[in-house]
Length: 430
Ligand code: URA
Image (cartoon, rainbow, N blue to C red; front, side):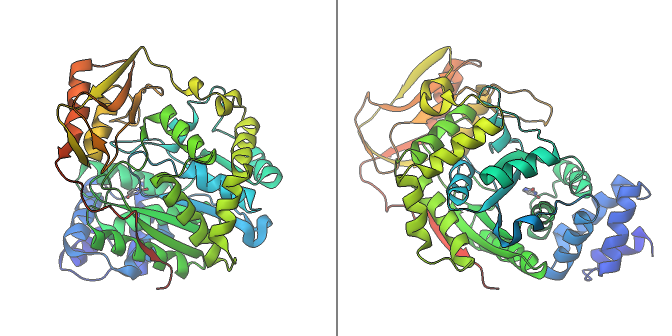
């Protein structure tokens, strides 16, 4: 077997065998296949397709390229959650505490923000003192003792995915459902949880722009998970608009805290759905009511507080929201007309945070954790000329350019639109 034959086979549209995919990944890791050969194969995959079986073989090969966490000490109670990435998406800070408050063991490894999507680790690090680099022993002890931990992914998890992703990023081969599903699922499987819920974002602010591709990605990932004996559910959710009103790293913690303290909004709806569909898939009765109850009685907030304390974070940030706001310039973006807000473009909103220095273009970029914005008028809210659409929190960047970018994200019209649905599809039976 050699790599040229494998590239040739895919170029002709043939299905790759398990052995061919293992050969490719093994030799990619050994360095005996050149990056330009892998790039050619990736492009052939994008052009000719990659089916369910091929995705499962690639997932397994990337999973075997590094170490895996063994969470079997938590029996059937171990839980993981993943989002395919969006804007104003802080569901992890709500879902994980809800499930921990209900007695489950939530061991979550997360990433940093890249491009227009925010990263869970960056958001957490806006809480003074909080450590995301726990040792394996500390991580296990924390999950055992309080039921939850959110940490950085260790470097030895799926190194083949890291190599492949870096090549995909620079060869326009990221957006293939087979490659994305293998990339996400190899990392989820390496994280070791028995029960997994996936939030597959759909819309302008997501990888998957339309519902049929989001459903196909969700279906593909659930199929891979089931093949590997996981209890897995995917929820396709709306990412045509920012999920929460708070956008920016520290501000998204603030938005999540508002929900943990009882605010009911789109972020709440998506978080309750993700938590309850996972519990239902585990056979839990009255799952939704139970999730709502631990928000109402403060137990989910208490779990978040415990996690912050265990990881060395300053818990005064939980009680005093103002710690999460730290900006030299606070500015209102006002409407130039009367009417209803009928659109908020998530990419323009994310771009404005990047203009403030709150987002990364390269993994090595350093960012301002405290800049961002709060949306004051959401879809279908009535607005008068001169009223505030959004509040900006700025430390860096060209203020006029940022202001124009946020104003441009909003569209005002004479009449409201049909209320957008947040939950588009739930997939757990393949
Ligand atoms: N997230 C991942 O981890 N991998 C992809 O390929 C796309 C999104």
